[in-house]
Amino acid sequence: MSKVRIVTDSTADIPVEDRERLGIEMVPLKVHFGNETYIDAVTIQSQRFYELLAESSALPTTSQPSPVDFLDMYKKILAEEPDAQIISVHLSAAMSGTYQSAVLAKSLLEEQADITIIDSKSASYGFGLLVVAAAEAAQAGKTKEECLELIHHNRENTGLFFLVDTLEFLQKGGRIGKAAAFLGSLLNIKPILSIDDEGEVTSIEKARGQKKAMARIVELLKEGGYADKEVKVIIAHAHSVPAAEELSSLIKSHFQVKHLSYTSIGPVIGTHTGPGTVAVFMLPV
Image (cartoon, rainbow, N blue to C red; front, side, top):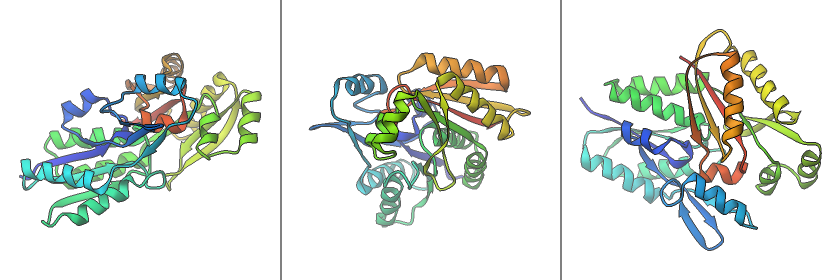
């Protein structure tokens, strides 16, 4: 039977030990601080990134992998297993050209390789959890079709909300205007963000202060129908353990949490959301 191999990119924010345990291949994006270029999750990890961010006067920039980066990865897998069936799951195409690079790479492969490329229409562990679940299924001997079905099912059923600590990074990245950012900071406004069906970051609503914002996230998840189900929860944070712990204890007191774990928001996503961001990803089990 052909082996199902899973490929993703660094913005899935999957801890390295999980990638290694599950045999997930990762194509990294890059982060640029002035003339210095770092490879996301390879030559720079979250902690160092947030240290550099605090020291830097200018906002770093990010860049997607090239089609050749994906081509090399697909060729490596096919050299190891010529009949491998590849599922390649990537950052929302509305946010990055990463997905398009993967599509181009597939078209450059001369041999008829079995590769399915998926636009996750999500970011960070919003699609990291899709990748992990697919890799677990592949390891358990599920077929490619079963793995794909699981990815689509989980994508439809994942609840996710982000809370940014400051509007500064959204403003610098062109997501909101300067006046709105200034006013928001002045009034301690915390926007509650999510990702819509098109894979775009969307502002759900605003709350005054972090405690109210977290309480509102709990309400929104209840409204989403998660209160009466056992759930798997992943809390992601950008160099902000206290916020992650505060949100997780709130989640545990309101939901039937079967599994809870933490991950770091990596350098590429962190460039756009800033330090102090905290996110919750919830999936019925």
